[in-house]
Each structure stands twice: as structure tokens, then as C-alpha cells.
Length: 387
Image (cartoon, rainbow, N blue to C red; front, top):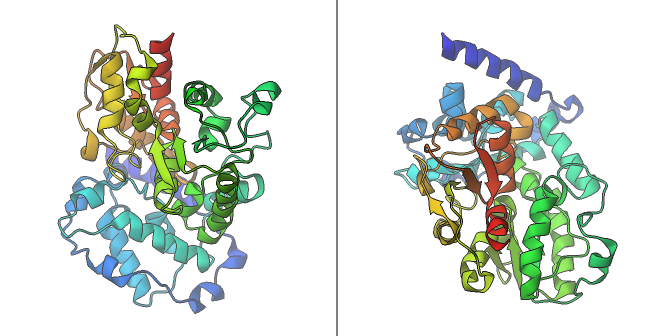
């Protein structure tokens, strides 16, 4: 009975989130072919392994809300089913956390297929209001929040005027740290500037939100803007404290750029940071796009263990449960997103002072889930040890 009530609540929320721009649907969606790599789709053998690990399915309980169901829907689309609004509740509710790919015995990569399918739906004019709101914010303001403030507002005019115009290293701040957690940005840059790192004068969104939700053409324009900024600075290495920015900069920008996550950089320079030991016990949450998608597991743990005691969560590394914030799910399906975050908090061990992570979106979603243990970014822990 409890699951039925929960599912009904999710259905109601889903219905509100999936209002369409009717002018863009209809004939347009029927005329355009649905082009997704068939080989990637047919790798899925419908074994159902993903049902046991999919975080959204765990909350919602519908077959269409797990990887197997999504792959079946995508298969029907490439075989001639007209793209329409009835597939949105399935494809738009995937967080692209990647645990299905990590566990798939057939070697399928469902998040990659889902993102490709979303891009095709966008081409066909089939989108949710939430997707359109996100696209408009990034396209018009250069950030995912629609903020009009200067992206470097967390620096004083004097500090901005002293930024090196040329450097081999750039700190790519990201939307979240620029506008929601400027204290993270400031603390990060206070560390990085000692190593000759500078900032882009006109950084815009890395384009991760656009790529994850299917707006590839819009993403390419913004990415080109950032690339021009990077070329002008002369940088060959980008450092970022955002897992979403990291996976996008590393996998969607030109290969000649070296992209390093903040935990990796900190781990490489531990001796130079002169960190003091703290009488604390913390646990670490692996962000999906830093961990499963890019295998960055050891660096953040090395940094934490140099500062204090680390007590691991119940599910870690490739088995880590998603915070629920990625893939456009937070903005499109907030009830599902927060339920996923609450489930993740169930993995926290007893007797820890903080939950540490290395992704501002994870910080936001886990904080909003309302646990009784403070969630902090790894740079905050480092700042405590440097005081």
C-alpha cells in the first residue's frame, strides 16, 4: 500500500513536469527519423540485472522507469514508433548515474543510449517544460540558473584586475560554485592561485546540462565559446571542482586538453599544502560522474585520509548510490530526485562528523534531503586543515 501511494505521488509529479510545447510536437515528430546507434541498443539482452540497481526504479517501481524498460522503448522508437510525449516519463527520468552500465553483463552503456535518445527527441520537438526552462537559462545567460550577475562576482574588483591573462592552468569554476556555492569557488581559488592557476574572463556553462538533456546543438555553441576563452588564455590544463563539469570537459571537449578534478590536483600536491590532522571522522560520497563515469575513486580518499579518519558508506565506488541530482532529474522530477537523495543518506555510517563529497550538485541534493549530518565539499575540509 505504501508503494502504491508513493507511485501515485510520483505519477502526479511526473504529469506536472511533462507538459509539452505543443507547437513543436505533432507532425514534426512523425517526419524525422529516430537515429540512435542500433548496436548500442541491441547489446541489451533484457536480462533484468539493471532492475536490481536502478535508483529511479527503486523509488518509482514501474518497468518503464528502469534501464531495461528504457532500452525497450528506445528500441521501439528506432524501429518505427513515432516519437511522442508518452515516452518522456521513461527517458527524461533517468539520472544517467551509470550503475546499470557498471553492472551490465552484456557490456551495454544505457546512459549513453538514453542521452542519444533524448537528443533525438529534442530534434523531433518532444521535450518537457523543465528541459526547455533549462535550455533557455543556459542559452540566454550562460549558466543553468539564469543568473545575470557576473560569474566572478565572488572576487573583488581588485582581485579580478590582478588575474593573470595568460597561464597554462585554468580553474573552471562551473555554474553551481559560481552562483550557489561561491564560498567553494573562493576557497578553491585561494589554493589554486598559489600554483599559477588563473580563471577564464568570460566562462560560461560547461554545457553538461544541455548535453545530458539532449540539446546538443545549443551545447556546441557554448562549448565553442569556452574553447575560445581557453585558447586566448593559452591553457593546456583545466582544473574543476564540479563532477558534471569534469566529465563534460574531459569527454566532450577536445582531447588535447588535460582535464583534472580538484581531488586529483589536491592529491598530487598534498605535501605542498601542509595540511594539519583534524580530530574528525567523515564519510565520502562518490559522485556518479566523477566515480563510475571516470573512475576517480582514490584521489578524494587520499586527501581525506591525509586530514582525518575516513569511515566508508555502505555502498561505495562503483556501487555508490546516486544522489538523484543528475541527468535533469532534479529540475524535472524533484520528488523522485529527493527520494533518491534520502535513500543515499541511508548508507551513511554512524559516528561521522561530516559527509564529504566532490560535486556541488551532490552537496545541494543531499542537503535538501534533510539528513542530520552536515554535507560539505572536499575543499571545505581542506580549508579546515589549512587554518
